[in-house]
Amino acid sequence: MYGTEDADVTTWRKSSYSNGDQGNCVEVRDDLPGLVPIRDSKDPSIGHLTIGAASWTALTNALRH
Image (cartoon, rainbow, N blue to C red; front, side, top):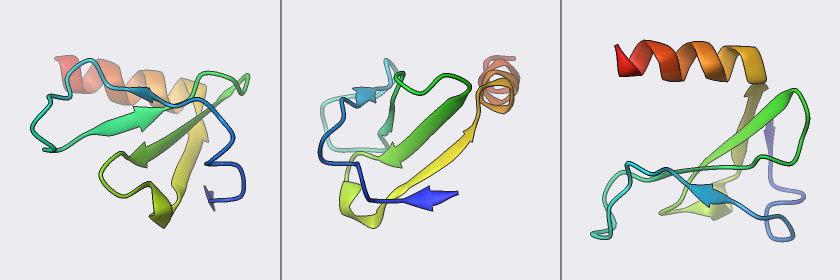
């Protein structure tokens, strides 16, 4: 699901793996139980992708290993 409706009024958290050189940065929100909105911090105006929390956990676990 994509959306932009609430992107400016919520708190986004930048990935701990993001650096300060404006490289590849991902931001997520933690305020929706069971869902994880994700966006590109370089261009938040393009909207965000919302996935289920279980899918997000599976993705981040797979990327770690």
